[in-house]
Length: 187
Image (tube, rainbow, N blue to C red):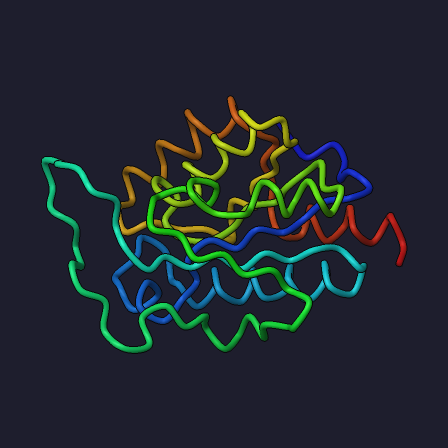
């Protein structure tokens, strides 16, 4: 479904745009994803809307058929990319699972801020972005996904999420669509 509106209190949630993750090979050029996410963060701040920067600093326990790519995180791994220009008013969340809500303060913080909708961007489409979008929807948030501001390490997984999963979870569109909705609101 195309983006129909942005709620009065919508937050931008940026998933895993951190130095360690953006260094991995991705299905789409990461520079464009980072640029569009940074543009959205700047626009949200300019409209007085919350920006949440999420990084990942671990992996959950449990067995999987594919071992985690990284078992130990080198120094600087969790640092947000400079292009995001983190601001003191941004809320930061460090997660150790795929999604940003599990064992973090994200739900309580968003609800405390009166947020009813989240716009989600970042990496990886089929893990952090999808897990966060699913959980946000289950918690009752309206969810919007900026499809051109996300990518994955696996092109097939990315394409499957965009074609089959996301239309069932959220409204989807582009960075431009979201910026246009913000512009119509004024400041």
